[in-house]
Length: 349
Ligand code: KG4
Ligand code: ZN
Image (cartoon, rainbow, N blue to C red):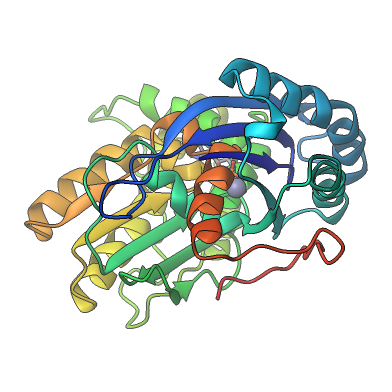
């Protein structure tokens, strides 16, 4: 079957076609991405230092049909060949979500195709299912780290999801973005802070910069990043020469975030006897997170598989939406086009 995925929850308008065959035993085979088109608005929002919702929605209106057309064209698929359309229902910016969802509604009506509502965060999780030949072993502990979410989840073999812990304030991606804003480095902050951190080379004469690791040793599986952000702000205020030390500040700030993310993920995996650890979401594009998580899982969780999506499927994209839609569609979870509705605060259940 062929599934079209559409994503427009924030500042990326995206469409993708996924092909999947049923195996002889009836199970679904490997998910193959035939096209993955993303029109990013980063350049537009850069000058405001963040996403401006009304501007984003207008851009989605302009881009959504061309992006869908391109996804179909690149995959060499006609609308009549589609089995279903997967669409992001939420969470996200309401006006951005509406643009994608109303487009999906119209296309489903015109093409007479079933609709599958996808939770954006579930989409990030299913990015890990793309292209995998081997079955995924459950239970899986999943760290979802994006601009809006930092959550630890448990997935069982029926793919039911349970929340184990989440951030009490800022998300990890947001912490990166806010630090970049504080140091006037640009938007989005994640890749920029990561690049500066990478440039840092330790010298014996360096100023001592040590930031806190909030909730690192707390008994629960929750996170908190706002104290870290405030600690950085005060440190910068007290250091007249901070501009010379941007790589060092970025390095320490990033390491504080990574130490917390990795320690809590390993703790959750141990507690719940995970056979697989997954990391998903925009921050999972981060090289150091990928490298250090791999090292830690190998050392502390022998025999446990670590899955992190290919980089192109870490930040917002529609292949992940199509991937989630494949499994939901297979379970018969479709929505009548008349009943389709966005939910900007949609929770994972
Ligand atoms: O998943 P995503 O594209 O959108 C949301 O659903 O939020 O995640 C975007 C977030 C931003 O906060 C961005 O700064 C962060 O992911 N990000 C990174 C990297 N690339 C994107 N953070 C750290 N390192 C990166 N390389
Ligand atoms: Zn996202």
